[in-house]
Amino acid sequence: MKNKITVLFAIILLVSCGEKKSVDSKMNEEKVEKVKLMTLDPGHFHAALVHKEMYPQVDSTIYVFAPEGPEVRDFLKKINSYNNREEEPTDWMVKENITDDYLSNMIADKPGNVMIVAGKNSKKIDYILAAVKAGLNVYADKPLVINVEGFEKLKEAFKLAEENNVLIYDIMTERFESTTMMQKLFSTMPNVFGELIEGTPEDPAIVKESVHHFFKYVSGQALVRPSWFFDIDEEGEGIVDVTTHLVDLVQWEAYPNQIINTGDIQMVSARRWPTILTNEEFEKVTGLSEFPSYLDKDLVDGKLNVYSNGEMTYKIKNKYAKVSVIWNYQAPEGTGDTHFSIMRGTKCDLIIKQGPGENYKPTLYLRPKNKEGFEELLNTAIDGEVQTQFIGTTTELMKDGTWRINIPDEFKIGHEAHFGQVTTNYLKYLEIGQLPDWEVPNMIAKYYTTIEAYKLAREK
Image 1 (cartoon, rainbow, N blue to C red):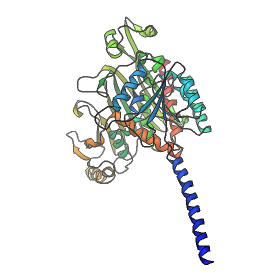
Image 2 (image 1 turned 135 degrees about the horizontal axis):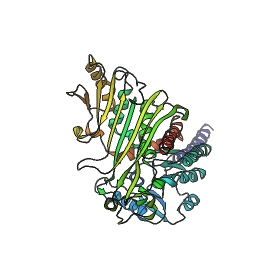
Image 3 (image 1 turned 90 degrees about the horizontal axis):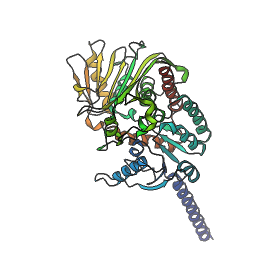
Image 4 (image 1 turned 180 degrees about the vertical axis):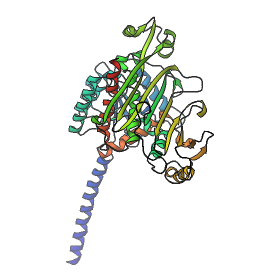
């Protein structure tokens, strides 16, 4: 009898274990369900840069919904080049849906759960609204909006995203630039930086300036820009485009992990001015020998006036900030896009320069207000928190009394690689099903800032 009971118990145990294995196996399958990416109307090369590397959480099949045209063909060409490069080739399999009904087809089919959008900024917010209404997550290149009407739609989109339990996220690559990360790190050290001063409109507490160029090289090839890129009704003015990154960095550095509301923003001044392109310059960057008719409104004496430059001064909470963006036609030989920034502290200023003295590479300098004892405090910081995050970093005293922070080259991976870093970060948020509590209100505050500057600049 005892043996029979033992055998019966063993059978029950085996069945129970089998059922548990089956349940566990099912749970594991659900847990490792891949993220599936859909790219909608890729009109900007940033759409392709998201796919420059593979991600373990992402299915290798990607879906493209777009109208026929040079933009989608350029996107597909870039994906193909990533798949066929010699070093660390990707393994994307692309399923194309090239048709004029690309948006409705994506919404109807929904082969993926994340929509990537990088292209015509005038259409972007409508794409985002359609996606969140359909229960899709959104991963979007900046800017999400370029005018007042778009900002109102953006607020609606965030509300719908919360109701449908999906995430909207814009691609803020500059948060991963090592020099900016180092500037932020030092700004959190009271012994070295003190605290951010209030500043004045003439001498703001924090300044961000970005210089860009229409003609440039991407992934080793001369970038061909679509002609609509120069139409401010499609691309948006400079004051609402690249400034998105700069306003984001002001928030991210001055008030890390803190919620910023629209009521915390007070616009002080804003202005806009054009970059003037000749027909020959336009042809070199677009491949078109003539200006399209829709750019006639921006022609002055046969030259194209592109309002790609903008500047704003504003108060964020109780600190003054200044942000400006400048677009030139082409960078001098051996140079490229540049960034300048300063954070003024009570104990030192944190300055990022990228000029001839830095070989056009972003470099951080610390300018102490009181030199006595500063070197000891700086060395303590370098040996502590800095080495933890940026091992191998050294300092160098300059003739003007500032300290240059030498960040090892291994941390300077370049703008294109930052897309992979942002994407990895976004995938973590998708996995847990939410963004940090400050991200959404700060995105709304960010676009409120750019749109307020846009409104004020156009009044003049």
